[in-house]
Length: 225
Image 1 (tube, one colour):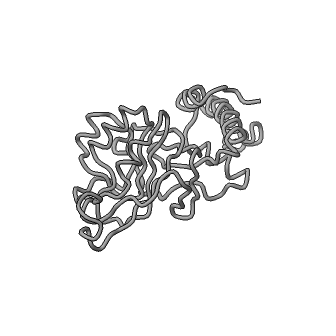
Image 2: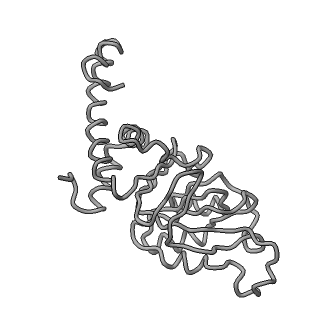
Image 3: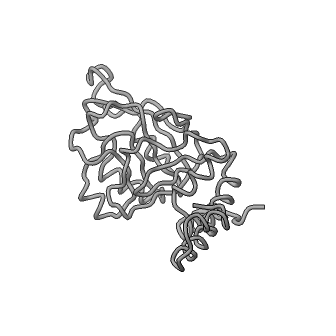
């Protein structure tokens, strides 16, 4: 039986007691070996944490912005952004790393909708504006070049793949300064229950090490390191 009843309870518990590394360790033991997104995806501020349900977005490079007319310069981007719900994470892939996929106004809209954050397989821009909002955005970093003349959203709310990691709508996206992992919905209870058990056990190991116990002794006693 889960130790939480709602997403709010799970996400609060996760923020209070967990970190992506321990969640990843548990997924490894369950055979979910490829759940971390590329390591260059980092928070704009090292203290930022993102956790929420995935709302996947697919972006594509375009060769001729005039082909679809000026009214469709961003494709389905506005619809994707407006579809965000509370506790969802806008998570986007598919574009070449030659322009920004996210910005300040998008952060403002997502925040107003109660969305949990944004994760880009590429760059964002308006960095100072996003930092002032203190909105969790994870990306390759800041790059001012706009997507309007270079790319557009072609689909959203459907499964995507990022560097070999499958991301389905409703999967849990969890990230901090050490990286972003994807927890499949079907495994989330087992993963987070195991992670809480492991994290609480690590507290005992830490206390033992601080008391002078050797790493060999600590591992033999607790089976955690």
